[in-house]
View 1 (cartoon, rainbow, N blue to C red):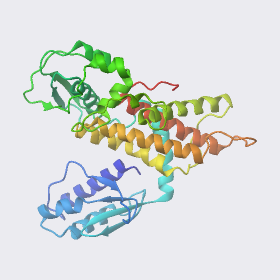
View 2: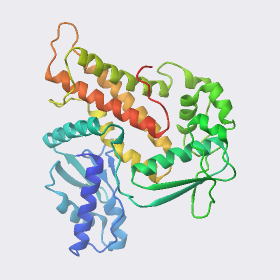
View 3: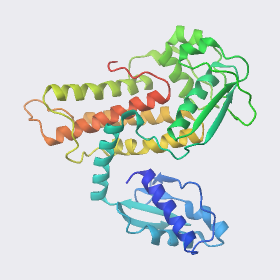
View 4: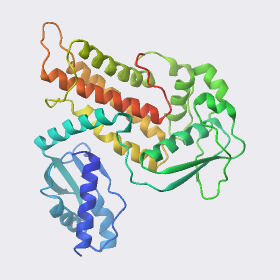
Length: 353
């Protein structure tokens, strides 16, 4: 069960409680589920009962108990506890979670760049507007891509005539639109033109440098974006993707195709893959491509930890096995998530770095 699955399960429990007149409160548009913090209980936690307690005129722990009774027994959930003032804590069922991991790896491999895309906002029109500045233009393009992953339609407008030089950063220069009724994309300016950034850093490094910091932070655009080593997060993300592809190619050369036949003990990587749809949704909702960039770093770090402790290919005299095929499938899935995330930022994911 993924965090998104768990969120939908809790939201369904809220709707049931309201429909049964056990809970008199407005049903929220979404329910936030997070990894349990250090010292907490279970695998995931949710504070929705505290959110509903006021409107329902009930103690939060009583609301939590109503929801717990409607969640207990759901396939994939082993235990539900109430802690503190009314937090719901979920422990996943290990066997069911193993099946979920296998299903997720299969889904990522089959859907590729489309993994994490939904139709939640199908038919909704979003209007974005940004000043005539290169960082704002780049962020607006990525926000538009993110909103489309949720099923939305997007129109991007610029204050003034768009700069044709933005095309060097893969920004599509469209017609000018007014700001009325639009969401404003207004990050801290880059302090440089598109042409200057491309000449100094190249397109991909410039795009990463413009988007990795939060919009309210200054974008550091120094030469360390070009360092080919572990000190450069962009290099690590692209190298992890290239390494994943290389592993699959080498496995096929050995007659060892990827197939998730055995559960792979790589909890951090499985969690990072499971979190990807939620990251896309949150980044779209908050107009924050930096969340995608940070998530890609998490996926890359988890991939290298997995790669270092659980080699996907046979070593020495070791014979190919089902375990190797499963590790290769997981590596392939990680590579696809990394490629999809880079695509959201407009950055190329070359097969070799």
